[in-house]
Image 1 (cartoon, rainbow, N blue to C red):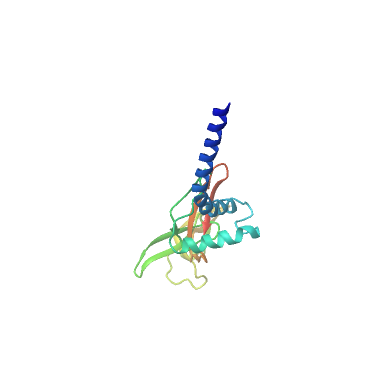
Image 2 (cartoon, rainbow, N blue to C red; image 1 turned 60 degrees about the vertical axis):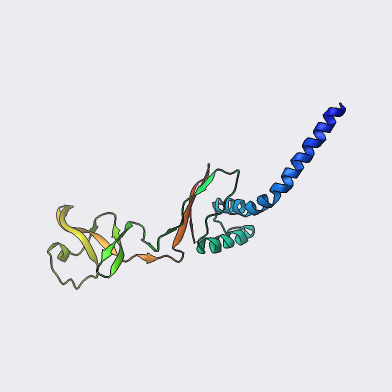
Length: 178
């Protein structure tokens, strides 16, 4: 019995010393766990006041080029930081390419839209519209011909153009813009 108690005491002290050694790391990682918990909130990462300081620290941290913080024990992974300064309204997709002035971005409608018939007649000056179109064509619609084309527009500029994708097990994927 005495030997059992002695072994138990040594075991408890050994575990206690490991805890003391690991404690600074656990505190350092707690910020990463707070960030993941706040990001997993369906109401948004800044909904609760307790989440604001760790998330604001995250924005600053990522903006300086640091990696996403870690949290052990949680099934989570994050992508590398990405940069996407432009976005399109619903019903349009972003197209990036090269132009005479360098890189260019435009939004192109995902479906054909009715446009001025002058586009289908290849008229160079179209005073009635400032739209630019791609692939104009005449198409029969309700027993009449209609000029349809993919419409292009200028993209919107994001306020926060950098992002990472965070995947949390059983909660899904969240895109975090900063």
